[in-house]
Length: 306
Image (cartoon, rainbow, N blue to C red; front, side):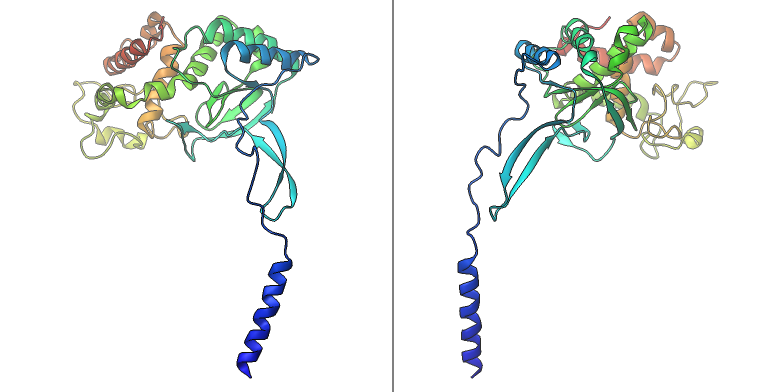
């Protein structure tokens, strides 16, 4: 009797599953390349972005949602898929949980011409041919927990903030702005493994002063008790051991990672002339030593430094 019940239940299950619609197994064009700008001659901003894309191969957007597509799930139910630029921080093409973009606001179409002109005239001529820029997102306000308000390196886009302010920037602000954008574009190229030997010298310039632990991510008020080997009379400050400052994410600590240290140097190096950098840090031998290593890498990449 029990066997008959089991057979009856199995028959009902088989009938139910046979009546269900077969799962969809073919998904045409779902892996399309979204980082392509299509022209719209009737929209001046889109047309300008299209011409920039044709000229440089870099897609520029004013919205982080860059497209949509009607799709079907595995059971054939239709839905709308939206492709959104990823602002997860990325080093070497690998996404990281931190740092991140905390907030941003979109710029307007009227802001686009000045931004494209700035990129053409002051950024692209400096970039070596081998540096890949997946896309650029132009925004008005930008707030990040590590890289301020000017530029942030996401997984498949470089977010550039303060776009409406470009035409009104004074020389000092414009130079800092340029340095931040170039830092975002060049981080991966500078941190390439082929420069590991130079980068180890860069890191060890600071690391040699703390032997009990790593000098990165040290609580500032414990620095004096950890540092040894500075010349007599020199106070153990972040600058004295070769850091430009504390970590941007937490001012109570030295830079929390080696790549943050590199990023800080990159931005300062590319945002200042050599003379300006020396005016700021020329009395700090360890900073000038690390500055030399960064310039050495940039020279090998063929990035002109003032």
